[in-house]
Image 1 (cartoon, one colour):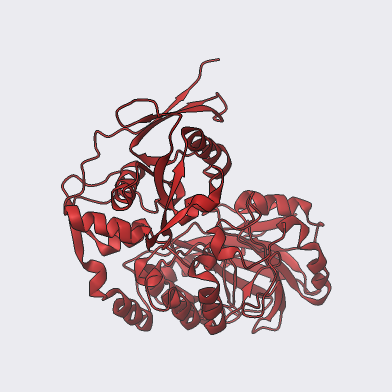
Image 2 (cartoon, rainbow, N blue to C red):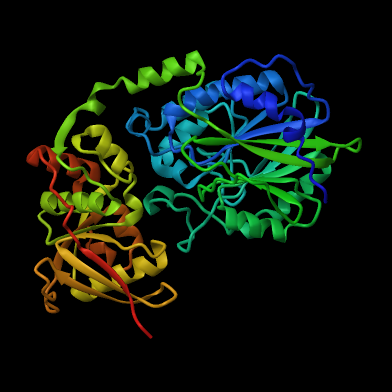
Length: 489
């Protein structure tokens, strides 16, 4: 199949000027085209919303038939959104104002809980889609939908959500427990029949680029025109095709959006397709109304309150993990503490003050602080299963322990050695009080989970209490609690 890059040939120069904040002197008729602007994994990147809104407005003037789609994970990642009351409302308010046409359900849509997600979905002016999730009375998620463009074409959309080894999205198990999920690859075929009633059929997925490629290979040739993806945070800056299907994804945090151009022939079928990644750069022209809304939300003085200082900064995720687990350990009086690597959501904190905003950005999930009594054997099971099965071969970050991971040549785990912070073996005949988040307590394997105790505070509250008490963050620049080495064969 020959793919003609319509945007490059016809609108490239004009669109470049447009997105630099300049005016466009001529207008291209929509004619036999459908344009789709897509983003994914925005993670409440509200600081870029005013620029994105300007881009959407500009493109709609150029292409009145433009559809705006989200590949999911609209929520979680900005405390001004995550700590808002109601939680997550600013992102929905902004998406409504922009005029999104649809969003797939992402795993972080569940971070607001069942009631929170139901509230946000019911107040969104666009639908949430997911074909492999059972709808409920309070959360009527659609498996598919049909849109009609302003130039008279019909677009069918089917949506899929990634499901992990536990049979749930990558979410806190307690947040998704009320819902039923199915294998994505066993959930879409019943909806392919809508091909006969629409001009364009696409998937809007929160599935990851590798799974999108596998899906494209499995689809009947000529049935699906496009897969708009998310979840893997992949910046697809060169056109990606699989089985004749164009696959797009635009990174994360609103650094980019993707403009896709579908050209339809006289038989109302796609005869050419192309995509272009557009940077959403701060500093360009903003939409004034969206800028005013963002500035109002960001003016919350509580978020800027300083809790402590750090003289040299916390310069890696490992150091940030040390801070988190030291806080968990001290606040709960535990022998040891740990955090899953995926729970550390920023890369560093610069020298200077550490604010409430920093803490809520570092740990945005409002997980409960938990403790559990574990034997050394159960600790070994937890660390080993986490590395190979849940954490993409990233080590758990501890407090009060030195942990050594022995790896095989292929990166899989040979074994784990656990010592206390004096480099002494743990007593095999006793149990140790271990502090961890409710998420970690739910997903890690260690034995009977009925022993887990709720400490009646969130992990963010534990970090805030720790920093407020000490006022100066520890210097972790010479701290080494984790060692990984490859075993020679």
